[in-house]
Image (cartoon, rainbow, N blue to C red):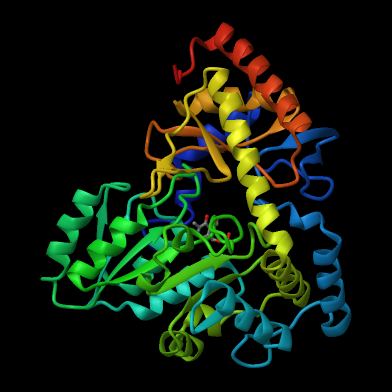
Length: 420
Ligand SMILES: Cc1ncc(COP(=O)(O)O)c(C=O)c1O
């Protein structure tokens, strides 16, 4: 007897399918556009040069000759693939060096390199947590954190984004749950570009005696004097138990890392299924990452970190002057402003975000559209992000395109949310 339900029915009934088709028919689909060259400040995309304000290549290192050389040398020495897991036949000396250098840079006892950042979160959370434990997560945490929490089967207690009063409420409940407790937050939130107030979060975690993990995907290679991330910027590195980062942003490659105490890292090496049961990254990815880490840790690193943040501040100012609504920046305990490379423009309605995106695309600027579930419902954003290698002339051209797109959009669809 056949089942009553076809498991493929979801593909036909998925509500987003209609939206996808409608956007495609209107020529306004913001996804799957094809790059025809490297990710640089200006890219070749679908037959036109376009200013790239939608990449995570924060330091611009994907085009750096030393990083490309690192990839080439690894390719020539180890071939195209490793055809096996890190656990069995897929570890090369570049992994060992990379883990050592990442641990040194992040100031932890040890580090473990995964094939992707998503797998690093899955592999850490799904292994460290069990059904008997409780995990407390910010509602803005990246999807890979949520996936890791669900994989673990731990009790999930979420709190509204950056609401420390609600975090505390969940902490007071979690310590009564009976198992271990881990709080997981992003250092820099990927869509909104804001930061976790780590000085207060570490203080709360200490007070309740629970462990803390921080995802530094958008902060490693950007924030702090050493570029070690949000934990360094807030001066709380010793208070954070576990740190995660990816290689697909500032490090211009692909992969992920968990950095922390040796006992935990060693445990992950022999127990983490997303580490053991997947193929190791291609050698070129590992070679490129190592070269990028070395640039970040050289004297040049600090210049790149400040350049990307200066560019973000420049774009923020320009967009605010044009009347776009932006997210407020956070402050460090000493009162200084925290700028990150992610500068989201608040739109609100999904379709409005798509139409504004189209106007920008036609004016020669590529940005990302974030709609639910990447952001809360009704919180659609155009997520812009800068590179250290953008210059003022290119950013000025992008701002002119924003001004033109805003005028055209508002004439047809009415006013956009205003920052005024
Ligand atoms: C905060 C955060 N964590 C984890 C990941 C996953 O990293 P990757 O894309 O390198 O697998 C991302 C990627 O977008 C991210 O933004």
